[in-house]
Length: 317
Image 1 (spheres, rainbow, N blue to C red):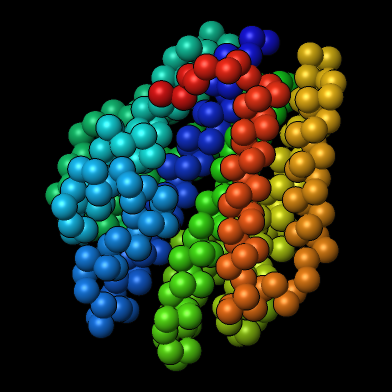
Image 2: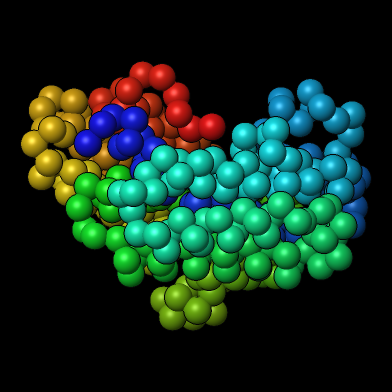
C-alpha cells in the first residue's frame, strides 16, 4: 500500500472521530452554560474554544467570544481546519481518493453527511443546539456502523481504526480536562448534574451506574473514563484497541521493522501506565499533570506514526 493511501485511511478514522467528539464536547459545555450564571458569557464560551485547542485561530478572526460566533467557528467554518464541517470535508476528500479501494457505502454515507452540513447555518444550531449536535453524533455513528459492517479486516480497516482510537483517547482526555476545571471552580452541590451531563454526552451514564451505582464524584468519573478496561470511550480501552490494530498492521510485511516496533513500544508504555495507574493521580486537585501528559503522549504518538508509516508531506486537507 502506498504511504499516502495509508495516511489517508488513518485520517479518515481520526476526522470522523474528531467530528463526533467535538459534538460531544460542545454538548457538555452547553450544559455548563445552563448551570453557570455567575460568569460572564464571553468567559464561558472562551473555555469551549480552549477545550478544543483553537484559541489562536479563533482570536485571529473574531474580537469576542459570543455564542453564535463560537458555535459557527467550531461547527460550520470550513476555513477552520478543526471544525466539524472541515473534518467531514477532509475525510470525504480522502475517501474520494480511495473510492475504488473501499466499500461504496462508506463513500455514500460521507457524501450524505457533507451535503447535510452544506445546508446548515448558525441559525439551525441556535434553534435547538442539543438536537443539532445529537444529529451530528448520529451521522458519525452511521458512518462507523457502515465501516464496521462492510469493510474487510485487512490493512485498510486497521489503519482507519488506529486513527479513530488515537483520536478518541485524546478527546476523552480533553473532555475530562474541561470537567476538572469546572468541578474545581464549583461548589460540590453543583457537581452531580454536571457529571451526569458528561456521562450522558459520552453515552456512559448507564455503564457508569452499573459499576459505581450512586457513587457519583469527580474522582469516580476520572477513574471510569481514564482507566476502565471495558468501557469503549475510556482512555485505557482506546489505547488497548490502538495497540491491537498496530499489531494487525504488523502482519503486513511492509510495516515490520524498527519503526513499527518504536510505535508499538510507545503505545504499550502508555497502555501500561494506565493499567497500573496510581489512583492518587486521579484526585481532582492532582489530576492535571496526568491529563496533560496523556494529551502530550497522544500528540507524540501521532507524530511517531506519521514519521514511521506515512510520507513526509501532509495530505490531511
